Length: 187
Image (cartoon, rainbow, N blue to C red; front, top):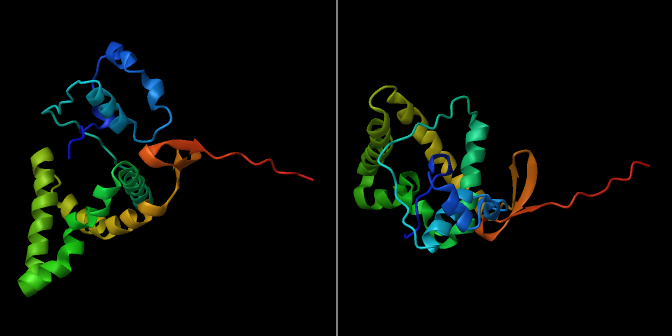
């Protein structure tokens, strides 16, 4: 949709160029700093290129609660960065599109759902990692498919995020605001 695809963990750029664009301090009050970083470079007329090398980003030891919190935070970001695109996000869910597929394919919609999930999730896994542990996406994809609509719906209305131990208010453009600390009278 015209936005640079920037993932913070894997960005490479010149420090001197970043300083000319305002430095890291320009990113200190936003949660989607990688997205904003990409926009800074784009708006300055620089090209943002995706490298062909796949970098491993392990997330082992992540509990189901932590995984849901991560997806909820990402949904909140998408709602704050591109609300119109976020509104149509359910159209990308095979599970949510199943009733429409049922109208078209009848009971064959279950086969359609299975094929889409296998091609999308198993295909992505095999493309990036090979066949080693290929059972993982087959096991986890359905759980993600059921949880994603909840993260999407909650993310549209949730206003606060806990980031690095601090509760912050999330606003448009993923601007972060610290909550005012109320003095508690101990008497």
